[in-house]
Image (cartoon, rainbow, N blue to C red):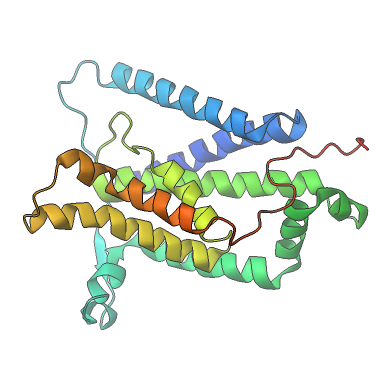
Length: 252
């Protein structure tokens, strides 16, 4: 069990390191965030595959690791339909529930959350009233990195029990769609994540009940639903005014 927590810490540290590098390039060097993000994604996809092949070069199979056990919540896990899905999970899922609630409170009811929102909407105005814009941007990047690292570690330590090449299969881009579809609010984003998670489960359920569809269609189903959901949200929300734009304090 201690090794599992060390693995989780490794995932948090890896995600933190990557996002702080991205923050340095996009905040300190004021480079395009989207291009930088795509470049880092491609680089990391290659380097993780490279190190994986080095580490398992002498083995014919990928090494298996133990996973976090499921912990049923007495009473709640027996609720029909939703009990097993929500209250018979591993410890990381329960931590996620807490993080969603904490995120909602922080963003909705604290000065820190208001400052972070102000920096995203109009960093120059936030700077004018004394908010330390760069520090807030680095803090947001750090939190983002650790949460992303946790999600990657979850796949290995709680879901699959093995690390394989390209195991995420583009799920990070679905996470981006979740943020957009959830209008950048914790509760709505969590609800959107449930929707897309249900879409991924649907492909296995359809196969299990014998629905005869091409395997390629089943694999693309979660991504197809993601695209449809995003198309349905066009024009129904407003992005933060300074989204993706580097803030240069001395610029006019």
